[in-house]
Length: 395
Ligand code: FEO
Image 1 (tube, helix red, strand yellow):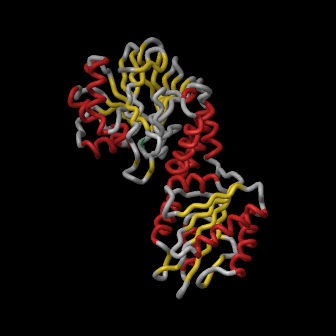
Image 2 (tube, helix red, strand yellow):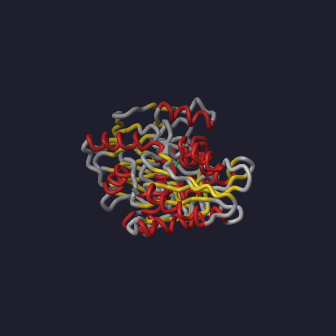
Image 3 (cartoon, rainbow, N blue to C red):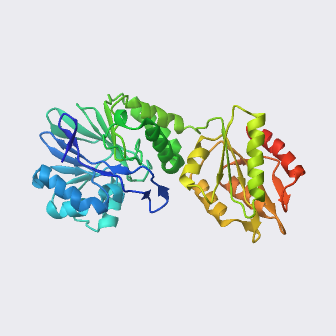
């Protein structure tokens, strides 16, 4: 089965309603996903990307039902990660001589994973082009660190389609394929979650790459990413949104994230939230128990926030392991230009706030005063400090 995208370009990927995680279990998927692969049948027949390894047999069988595999003139591997290259092994068993166009880093990635250095790799760099007949060309654009060093996009002239691979994608199953047919709430919440949790560390590169793409003045009628909806209605909207997200994005929001042992730190979290809502009613406040909430969802809220408050009780001269792990992920996402405050309860030694402060500073946050450090359960003096903490975060 193939589904027409435009003229002689077809979608031949996998809508993956059962996919529930990505990067192992590091990224939660709640609304399915897809691995979009595309078949171009001009004078040349070209396959752009494949699917995740568990769907390899289904993918190759389907492709063989559409065309004689020997008619594929070449394959474009925009990115070597296994969710896009997972069917290459089976495919190359059938058509071992077929050229694979990819970046120099793509050769390293594909060879490292599949151990077939004899595959017929054609290394391309930005600006290289291949004629595919009928007056059309494929032009390659390296996209290093969007989101792996080997990533690239492929632009098809004539039909004006940008095959952007991971960039501009979402982990979202859209059976109808297109952004104008997708559930818009889900489309945008999954797009921002994807950016916050996968692309944010590379925001300076995203900004520069978008400026480079804009300067080329390419007509873009369709953006065909490798996950989720294909952008055919106002496709430039997702490029504009990425440009906004790539520049230390924030809304008027404060996110409070904590874990608690006996609910003292929970009481502080709620009081800080109440004080912010009272003092700054225009500011959106969200409060999450780190141990009970999907970490990717909290990170999406951190991405939207101008400030965060993080709380943990002291335990074993340290903080709760749930908060430690969460802070390690926070540091990896390289958020910029955001404030933070710390709070927590302790019974004996009380190092928790200092650990929180150091880890938040390492993660690039500006930690403000005051902190709230409650010996045993919080009392009125601690709750009163929540007023000053709320002011410091919001002003
Ligand atoms: Fe969709 Fe980087 O893999």
